[in-house]
Length: 395
Image (cartoon, rainbow, N blue to C red; front, top):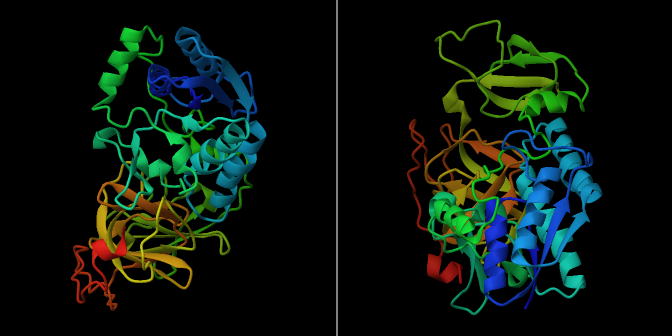
């Protein structure tokens, strides 16, 4: 099988490429040049797309004896990831650029080009598994080591893409094992630090980075009653759940800390309040996709788990489609949920699908026909039975 190994310059992708070679595949390495500033070097352990990373990837490819290329995807990355990131913050949402990069770059632009060139699969160093389900269709599952599982950021993969996705690290027990293997293979990246944060904001200062690209428009910070208790220089500097950096001039009557509850660019206001006001009993989105086969009857409520951040714990929930919208109601209230975030839906270890959150509903005092009343601790008392069992809803 002809395999294109996406080599970021890190230890995971290097070992993944090595395992693809060991499996007897015809492997070619490729590094994606995503930065529009080619002179950029890594700052500490941040980022994943610098010149230093490209050189690390080339050294690994040379050691493995495979051809190596650098493909310039910087224009596509800027328009599909960076510009989207800026626009989302400007609109008062909190985007996930890693999800957009996987969706639009690594498993769209890269995979499309790979298939056009005659490759059968794209190999990456993600920790996740592609397995054949009971119905014979391919499914995406969590990696064997949940502590390192990266299936959340791969939730954007579609049924058409799964047959061409290869994840050789799926069954690896730990990252320590990958580093030990890299050491045995003589790979120079064996002890290279993991990349983290947003690759195009190398210093990690998202607020400062946005301030250089979006105009400062002073406005008011208000409490839930609408009373002005502070000011800001631009709504793009705030995210839902934020506590620090609010610089409020009026303390809360009960003395408790306040958090950002809403960001309203159209009104140029930021709303703050107590932590319990961040509890969410329903999330929904119209931009959704299925990762493999969809449930037999997605309009009927089915049991699942929902995960709203890469490192968050999955929360039991019920989900269903209604009027073109993916709706999820968790059994325990979610906290600090922002529109623009990605919700990934699981059934057991399987990734069922994902959507971009466009609407949230607070839990306070709400009763609905599927999920019951939410108590002050955020626990939901179910008042009805699901319309179909898990085995009937999901193949």
